[in-house]
Image: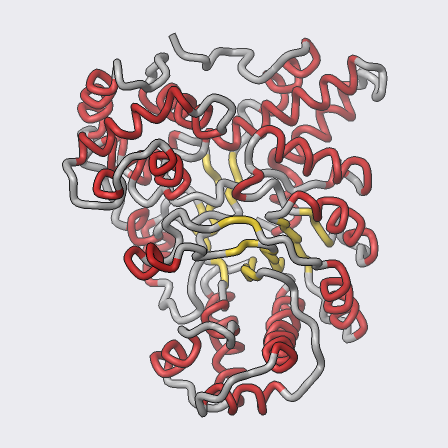
Length: 455
């Protein structure tokens, strides 16, 4: 038998009550993910379990590689069932890894399969999933609706024409599918892709770039965008001649760290100013060390499972940057994420420096992200926020996923949250006051995000 039951991850009576009565049936607001809008708009279907569960999922690819399995069976052109079988062989070894829990939840919630995947039952589960996948009930839109998802925010390049978001709105799809402005390709002057990207969008001067960014923000706003997202190793801060740095880059000249940071600071300020005008939230994802294996990056490209955690010092520049925006009255609602848990208390305390009415938690500490979206990582983030800030105003969980069956991650988070708070109540550290407990649980799981983003 499998591990998924009514009390999965719930180890105290109060936590069970909180989950069952207040958290379980709330809609999902997935305000940060990497689903492909085209697949939703076209209501794509999946030909088999390998495509649904493993297609594009570098979390799983990483663990299959760790089990000594050749790349041919992961991203190569081997038979799809053989790839599925390699994942099934890996699953029983993932004790303590959230992938074991997530996959078990996905099989249970979408396919009513109670058995944990293994080599022994791989063919049986493969066949059952594939029969069901032929049904229209397992198309992209149906999976989203079945998951009770109210809002999805995809992650979109500023050059996107957003045609599929527009189509979804015209089609009247019940779930709101909104774009998120992700300008990294236009702001990361230190990347080898920067100049080719500018040529592709027809930009050759600093003035053209700044105008283009503002124009694209306008276009995204017209199409329902309420968030931006920036991925960075650290938040830069330097005041310098951004135009000069841009011109040097366009001439093929090498830039200093100071010049790179001054350009990025200028771009971020332009963006933040526009976000603030529109009441958008700015997400800063800090601390990834990407594409470590250059051989595999050259072969497979980015986001294929070769990233890890960076260990830079981030506090001073982050503080200086946020202070710079606040001094200029352009600091937008901001969500700070750290990939390195050593910085939980850095971000947990940074929030309090820049909170401002009328917002409840204008500056948010983002949910446990990527390598931290496991039980220990989630609890560490929640406890840091509780110790240092106002946990009751937290905007909660997101999937950060490319998978259409990843929504049980919200259930996973809700169970962990309810169990943790239930434990505090039973230890006598918070009264068993159902009125306030209900408000806290339902706020974190749903209502706080709905209010914060004005969905």
